[in-house]
Image (tube, rainbow, N blue to C red; front, side, top):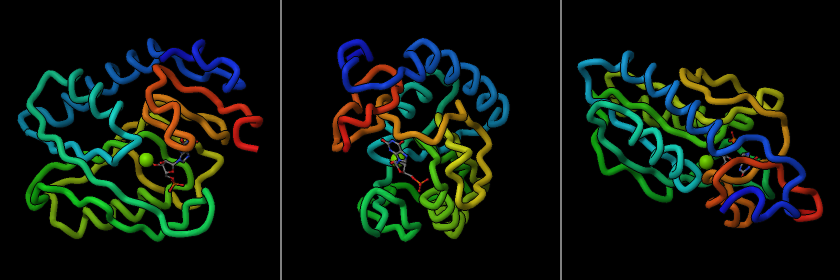
Length: 183
Ligand code: XMP
Ligand code: MG
């Protein structure tokens, strides 16, 4: 669906499908040159990263392997606690692989900091992070992210994989959720 299909639920449209497509293409050119001659393993974090994974992988003019992981943050409410539980682990063995974690969004950074440490311990040849969105004002830990699509304001956003109560993941863009939806 388009932002216009849920216009009453959004206080603003932050990114259009077109803007996202162009940015992913731009970042894909960097990934191609950085991994020239290699066959990287893209690790998507379910469920939010499915759209980024699908679009990035198809944009890349090189062979890649795809794998997925599902994690959940322990803790109360919507705040990420940094204590993470693996709901679905990877199928792939990471030892000696060039691994690129693909994420929808970095908010506090706690989830990715944990994930990076966890995957690092499995002996990859290299480990980098690709995130479509980042909220610089929400950072609680500094995570080194090699590829970032857009820095966005510290507001709750939905679309392009990101959900509120499992809705809006199929929105073809990113919007700010209107307060009347969650309050
Ligand atoms: P942290 O804080 O650990 O958060 O970097 C990571 C996960 O929290 C979710 N998240 C969001 N989901 N809109 C969403 O729909 C948001 O604005 C948002 N901010 C964080 C997301 O799953 C991310 O991987
Ligand atoms: Mg996520």
